[in-house]
Image 1 (cartoon, rainbow, N blue to C red):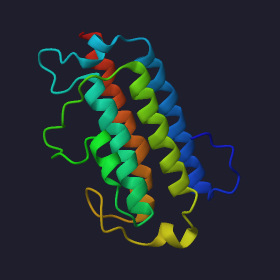
Image 2: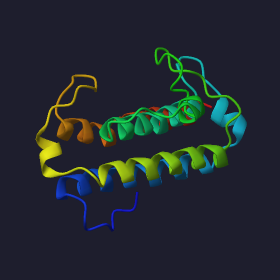
Image 3: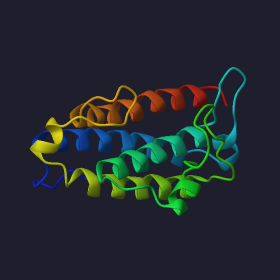
Length: 161
């Protein structure tokens, strides 16, 4: 989600920049791990790194489609485990650094396309989705925080594998 697009609303550009920063960090972490390490769920942890990465990407896919007022296509629901209950997070199986990178990049492209359409009027309206059903501005600001929270969890899991 490179933020060189000057056509983005300034608030949205800031959100996109934060997401881009988190994306680069996440890429650095997963690229240095083996598929076995990505799949490991250490004692005391609820999720593997692969599961958390797929969840991050899936959340970006979900919120992008909500912003576009569209349903997530069935193929994306299956690929990003959005067709399963989220509690506990569905376990990602058979992921590699390359497959996770592809998922993150696809999610990033879809999300950037969605946020590029957000206008000042959109930022002022309420959302009928999200944890607290706040406004669109709040939902957008949640996305980098969501990625950062799970990146922190991923770093802790990495220390324990």
